[in-house]
Image (tube, rainbow, N blue to C red; front, side, top):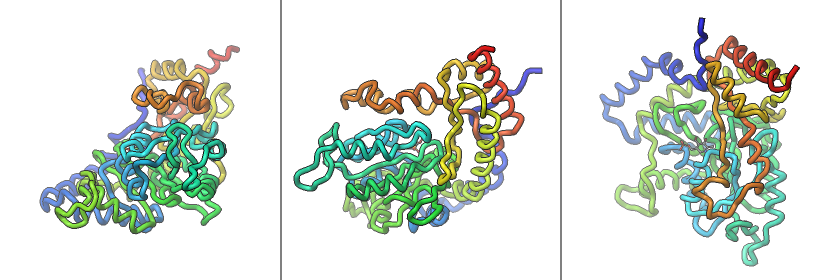
Length: 397
Ligand SMILES: Cc1ncc(COP(=O)(O)O)c(C=O)c1O
């Protein structure tokens, strides 16, 4: 009997389980014709702020807008440089550029794949200083660095305590790219276990359908404790107006759709359970894969509770292993095969191969295994058995 394929991500089952509720929410929206703004958006904002442990949440159209609006509302823009990582989805960097700031890229930690605080510190130490403000000047752009954007990649919070300390020393704002980290926790020396999006000046979230909390379309949000930042984002998402047809800023059409807010409210009630299922699946993978030669399982520091948006292994045989799994009906993903600093669109920035060695290695040695709530123990055993069979051939008897 041929075995059923194992998808990389199953989006069908959770939606089937919630179908009645989602359709009822859609019907309510159609009957009330409340499509833009209104009570569903406001209620979702309150509920998601409470979930993240922040005072405010502002719904926006997608995660890219969330990063861009967070930076702009915090006052980062033309004439500034922003430090982030190259091992991320390109939207992190697009958001910085589109907010008219320059991007400076630093390398990641080899174990967590998130921004390395040591490499951030080394980078900043090597910058010359702006004679007027004393700020470090971006080594690529020559612009004063005003912010740092750590990315909570794969659902794991970056090492925020040292990053916040470095930011304090250099007077930099911290904007978290929490697009992959809805509910991920970190035990901060500043106040114990807290959720992603509550550490910096603001946190940016994507609710792209495949995220742990995903809409049924495009959506995003910014969390913050800063009332002024929240107010400015509300203006930016609405063509720069606080009062209809009075545009104090040049803004965008970046609102969170009311129907998506209604869907997100329904799904938010399941997020803890879904994250728990992903964590249990990650623990099971760790057990099944530990000891297989040449396979490095994800590293989760003791002060971190990752929510496994992705379960990413390291292997020198990445492409061959992906092909082998595919041939057995097991689908995997690459996050991300070409780092931002080597993308064609940023060629004129002057980065080259060898500039960010850990990032470049991650691009060729990481493989994302099937991971979603509802992934069964049998499916995971099949994945592990297939990897083991591949490894025994690759390493020989
Ligand atoms: C790390 C990261 N940043 C930003 C984004 C952008 O989010 P969106 O696709 O909702 O614009 C994503 C989405 O995949 C992401 O993974």
